[in-house]
Amino acid sequence: MKILVPVKRVVDYNVKIRVKPDGTGVELANVKMSMNPFDEIAVEEALRLKEAGKAEEVVVVSIGPAKAEETLRTGLAMGADRAILVETDDTVEPLAVAKILKGVAEAEAPGLVIMGKQAIDDDSNQTGQMLAALLKCGQATFASKVELAEGSAKVTREVDGGLQTIDVKLPAIVTTDLRLNEPRYASLPNIMKAKKKPLDKKTPSDFGVDTAQRLKVLKTEEPGGRKAGIKVKTVAELVEKLKTEAGVL
Ligand code: AMP
Image (cartoon, rainbow, N blue to C red; front, top):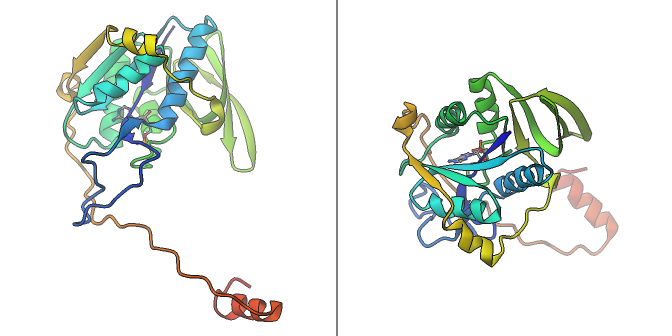
């Protein structure tokens, strides 16, 4: 079985985000970019399934600028076999990403697609669900455990206040939650080897997808700063302030 893993190039999670002075978006010039953390978890899970003999090939795919090749090379250095870059300089919204991934999935016929539950730049949490709908296949979102059986997958999902275990028929889409695994670091020899692994280049038009945007960002703002605190002398004063000023009692 083949596993397809979509990986997105996003601003590194350690970077302090700065909003552009004109509010049209966030500053991306000279900012460290990395693989979306949930996608690293997806690559790791695919590799573990391959190592357990449940899959033969792991293919990583990214839709983005030429520099997304670095993100794909990271996936290859972790252990993926092959990469596909669907190159575009436009910002591609989740629906168009899902349509492109549908094209890739139809060409590659994976038994399983494992992807992040959410990209940390747009926080959309949409692509996996839309891809499942477009492919008319099952989906198991927010996975914290994945077990493959013959023709199906048993997936434990993190839901409000607990865990839910479902059985989904393959091919299916699984989206990863934080606790699914801890991704490995790529070793230096594997980083060197990754440079020689195959990377195919495509464009959205190869899949007949129009990436024109449907949404317009009206405004981007920094979170409001925290107000300075105050000291109170007595518990009674604290309770009074919580009642009358904070309005929490
Ligand atoms: P989102 O719906 O944007 O929050 O993204 C959810 C998941 O879809 C991500 O974790 C990725 O696995 C995948 N994804 C989103 N955008 C892209 C992209 N441009 N290239 C590859 N995968 C993507």
